[in-house]
Amino acid sequence: MSSKDTKERILQAALAEFCDHGYAGANIARIVASAACNVRMIYHYYDNKDGLYRACLERVYAELRESEDKLHFWDSAPSEGIAQLTRFTFDYMWNNPQFPRMMLNENLNEGRFVREITSVNSRSRPLLEHIGLLLERGVETGEFKRRQKPLDVYLTILALSFIHISNLHTLMATFSFDARSPEFLHRRRDQAVDIVLAHLRGA
Image (tube, rainbow, N blue to C red; front, side, top):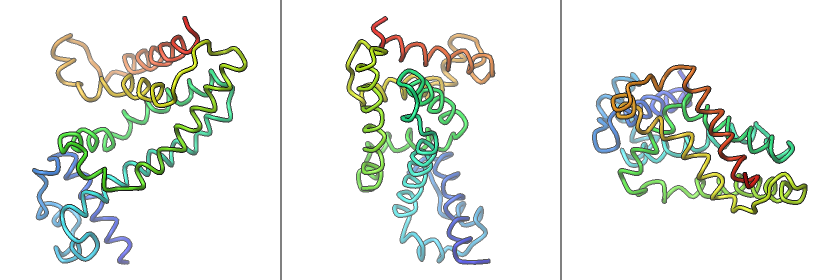
């Protein structure tokens, strides 16, 4: 088995461990057992637990940005482009649980590690630029009545795509409904699109 395969196997095992136990609770011995490797390989490829955790953070951010790039939402008409981005973000957060779990863990760390990864910030800037161009085009064509900051719009999309994940169990216990059901998820995604577009249209 190649060194590349071993490195990837360690990363995938670490992602699962950090998602399940957080940074503080993650155990190198469990990662080694899951990756079926020698503990020395972890320190060879990632230096230490901190390095491995940073690599996991960088991976989940990179996968999100790469998936967004494939969407090419900025090539669409303004309303449809924003709708595409909203639907994509909503579905991505649900279908790729490693991202929201790592975000929740890193926020418990007060962003200590993610601030050290320069690619996270640099790879996020093009997303806001694409959103900004789409919003400006929407104002010019009259589709959008309100001129909004790209970051504000994206934060609204994230919030609508995240609350039912971050508060999944407490919401279900409080309101006695199945937040995992396809019916709820489809309805909620449609609502997210409607809310974002209604605000931009000045409805």
